[in-house]
View 1 (cartoon, protein in one colour):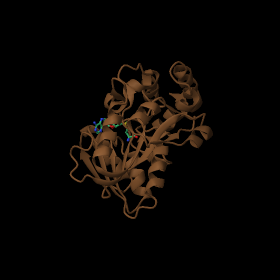
View 2 (view 1 turned 180 degrees about the horizontal axis):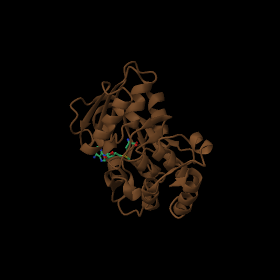
View 3 (view 1 turned 90 degrees about the vertical axis):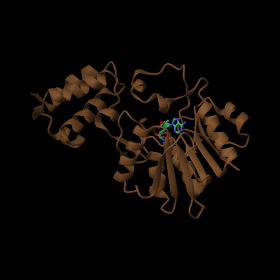
View 4 (view 1 turned 45 degrees about the vertical axis):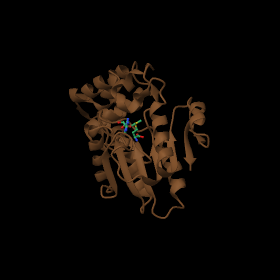
Length: 267
Ligand SMILES: C[S@@+](CC[C@H](N)C(=O)[O-])C[C@H]1O[C@@H](n2cnc3c(N)ncnc32)[C@H](O)[C@@H]1O
């Protein structure tokens, strides 16, 4: 048995090689393991409560497994969502895609929105919560992934507001008339060598083809060929020129680090 303080000391030492924020992650994992909050850890540091089970979590993190998969939890748009290795861990920059979608739909009475590649469901679920009159269709090519998005839709009480469909792009969608098509598709080059923690995330969610922008271009084709008013997409920081040559009227937005991160287009 270790005290809280001793366990944290050992864990921080173990995590130094694999984590950029070992103190913070050691604390998050301990709070998760003991089912307590961070303040409890501070006020109970001499309590002897920590057994080997905690160090099993530290061992997983030491092998680069993301904290979010170990705790099955991520915060997106200030809300908590369930995640596991069936889905991409939502990134903070994708909150901007929600913002762009919200401002696009603001003036539309009962917006009809379709999302390609819903993953954990965070984008569609936040849009359902923040646009109470919207009708949302959420698509993914992976059955496993759709199971996770349905868990999250239920957790947030919007399962009746979103239709989930297993589909390669829009192929299985009968209705082809939408106000907004939104997507954060896989956009990394197949040949890119990724950091070790990314190897835990599904390849289907990360890799967009030989040059990386193939799925983005297929999504633009869907937008051009169907009755869809707006297209909002996340993209790689270096894909602006290629997108612009494919979609002349794209308006780009930047992420908080100042990199091009996505675009909005209208018909
Ligand atoms: C980058 S993840 C985005 C997940 C989530 N929307 C988010 O922003 O966190 C891309 C998602 O697209 C899905 N996907 C990949 N190719 C697809 C395709 N051809 N049609 C539909 N979904 C696809 C993947 O399974 C994955 O869930």
